[in-house]
Image (cartoon, rainbow, N blue to C red; front, side):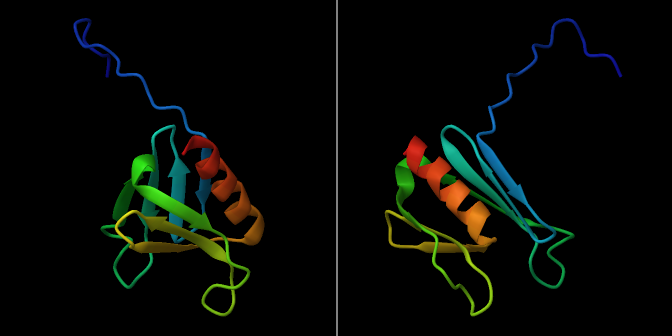
Length: 103
């Protein structure tokens, strides 16, 4: 389908870093972190989308062990809520560094 001439194309946000596996997708933009979580019984039908603006992030951690088996990324917001996402150690460090650069 062709776009109409009077419709302006909206500029896309530049993706700084993106991690994706079967259960979770973490995308870092210049002003926010976007997480699409497909973990759970029927979550693949309606995945949970979480947006965390950088001004709400107080700390980012990459623990050595999360849930006993894998490492992950823990984002703590200003209200004290901790968002825990599983990912491997190398990607956890890359995502942490990308977030810390833009805070």
